[in-house]
Amino acid sequence: MVSLTNGRTASPSMRGNTTFLPTERDALRVAKVEREIDRAVGQGPGPSYDSVVICGAGFTATLMAARLARSAQFHGKVVLAGPRTVESRRVKDGLTLRGYGTDYISYALDVPQNEYVAALYGDIIDGRGIGTRNLWAQAKKGRDGKYEFARVFAWQGGLHAGYSRPLFYGARNSRMQGAMHELMDRSGVIEVPDKVGSLEEAFDLAPGKRPLIVNAGHNQRLLGADVPKVDWATIAVQAPLRIKPSGMRYIGTNSAMLAPVVRGKTMDVVLFNAYADPLSPRSSFYGIIVVEVYPERPGFNQQKETDILIDELYGIADTMGLELDDPDETLFHGLIPGSPWRAPASNPGTLELQMIAHPGVSATFSDGMTSGAIGAVTAAEAVLRGVDPDAATRRALRVMNRDRRMWNLTRTKIARPADLALRTIGGAATFYPHGLHVAKTWASAG
Image (cartoon, rainbow, N blue to C red; front, side):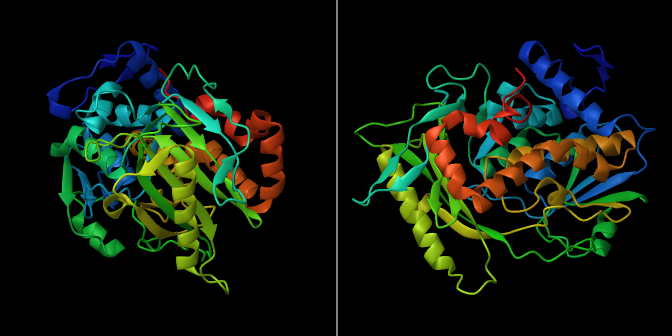
């Protein structure tokens, strides 16, 4: 057993037959993750399942498999079923991972955090993708057709100094998955490239007689859960950005700018974050705009909505002194179906991990990958300890999912009053939910 700084012990890793001994900042990160796991999971009698089949091979699925694979109990008894994400310059899916989420990833992989970060960015060593400040300025389109900002204020990290610990990492979702796959103990995972089509197919893949079947994919009814129909979805437009020859305005390196635009009675979430990508070495930021939509309601026009968001992306980027980097290759836009705000209960012997970790509309405030990381690691630890993974994962994500719901209500139900408050009293208006849980859900522990 390995002694940690908080006096607890952890099982040696199976990864490469080596044991990672966390020191200094990594020891703080491991200790904090373990405290959070203890709160959500507690102690149990040990595994009641003899194997795990994870349906889906995306971000959340890969991380759960990585944590289980490095344990002696499940090494070689974890199936990761489904096609892996192919890496390309196109920035599909999330692009911001909170520092707190990176703590969970490093814990699951059993590696120092700088090893994971190095795998993310490769030869890019100037630190451009690491964020230490979060800025905010309400944006609107002026009479001349150009976008303008209200007063810029900092709600995390100050206007100039930056936070003392990483607040976020900006990178492609597919690169984040690729880095996890490179560092995880793949000898402990049975990888099946084919998509699972039913609960019966998942059972057939199990290497044991008492498997847990985990739904970490987007087919919400794969395992027979009683999923209520929802009518909401998200349209997203996003692309990497490079600095124009005239230079940046309003924002500095290692920063993010949230610049929501009120349109009608709702806010379009407009976010520009520090970013780095080995496949797009000229890019130093990325821009994303997301909006909640209702595709089945009369009058919905997806192309019209998309065109408006693309115009906002180009226009606000120009105001900030940024421009899209090879949009023909990198720009993504699409409609992402929604999920119930409260995930249905998992049937016996199954875990609806995707819906528990990603409720409601698609991530709209740099929350998707972090909630996936917390959910994946907590679920794996619950399996290892013999505790109900459904209940444990819900407990671990309770605060984060509540804040996500509050932010959604703010931008869809009280957008205009919120816009006025943010323009007049600035940072005070962000206290809840964005400022209240900074240390818990954003910054890395060390």
